[in-house]
Every structure is written in C-alpha cells, then in structure tokens.
Amino acid sequence: MEIQPVIAWNERWSVGIQLLDEEHRQMVERINLLFAAAWARHVVSNRTFELLEEELKRHMVHESEILNKLGYSDVASHQKGLEALSEQLSAMKDKVLKMCRGGNQMLNKEAETFLRQWIVDCLEGNDGQYAAWLLGHDSVDLNKSDQAKA
Ligand SMILES: [Fe+2]
Image 1 (tube, rainbow, N blue to C red):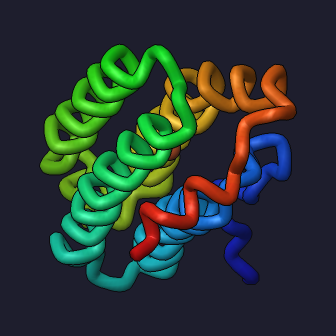
Image 2: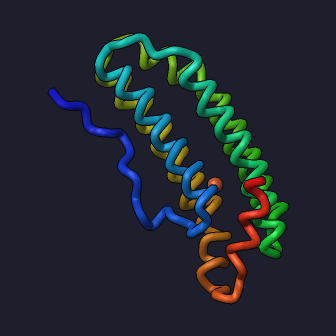
C-alpha cells in the first residue's frame, strides 16, 4: 500500500518569498517523513523530530529578519507567535514519538492530527497575517528579502 503524504503542500501557503517558502515546504516535508516511517512501522527517530525543531528555529530567525527588512510593522507579535509555536512543538515531542512508535494506527492518526494542526497554525494562523499584509502591499520590494539569505 502506497503511503500518502500526511500533509500535501497547498499553494495558498506560498508567501512569495523564496527562502521562506522553501523553509515552509521543508517543514511540511519533515512531518511527512516522520509519518512515512510511522506508517511503515519503521523506527521513528528522535532525530527526525529534532530536525523539525532545528528547521523551525532557523526559520524563526530568517522570517523575522526578512519581515523587518520589508518594513512589516508587527514583527514582534509574529515572533511571539513563533515562540509559542516552537514551545508547542517541543511540548508535543515525547507524546508524538511515543504514539508513533507503538505501531498502532489509531495513535498514528492522533499524532498526525497534532502535527497537522500545528503546521496549519504556523502557515495559516501566524504567517497568514504577514502574508495578507504582503498581498495588500504590492509596492513592498521582495528583493530586499534576498539580503537575508546571505
Ligand atoms: Fe513561517
């Protein structure tokens, strides 16, 4: 049986800034890798989850830098939202890993629900606010965001 990705990338999550879109896609992919292992009853390693945590930490820095450069006025509350999401992720780590290691389909589903909700909160909840701001400000120079890649 072919395993479907838990989360399919949705183009409406694209914010139009290449680095941030790549990082968002990478986190979605990381969650899919974690559950591909769980559903295939392979060992789900701590490392997979840690990579997601590390990717989020790097992303938090990049996103804040870029939003500052673009002149977004609400970087502080966006950052606060990211910190809360980061804490949530770490808090669910043990529970999710334990669920995924049981080989129990119901627990796999429950763990999936946690992480799916979490990534949607990231991409639509927290990031949705600056994404809407970007859409409403055609004059924002997205090229300025390139400087943050260096
Ligand atoms: Fe983000």
